[in-house]
Image (cartoon, rainbow, N blue to C red; front, side):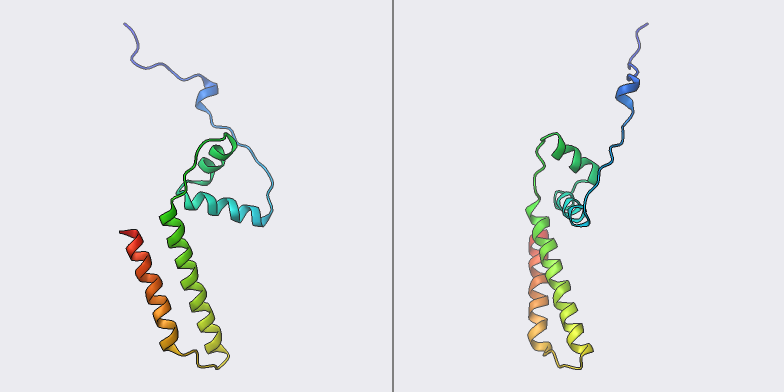
Length: 108
């Protein structure tokens, strides 16, 4: 009787580990590049190292940029309030609402 499945060779069944050094900025850049491609870090690094295609999900990139923009606007607003300045709510709210609306349009 023949076997339905063949056992993998030991060399094919074990994933190895490679360690390398990066600066904090390089680490941030690599993680961000993997994130916008919706890949885990190992998968992204394997693709990059082996010259394989790793398409950018531009919609995710735009949503992340808008999200960062909204976070920065909120931080700036909070800093102004902390300094006792009137940040003019009527000027800030439309920026945040428009960024949110854009994120919702993109995600649909």
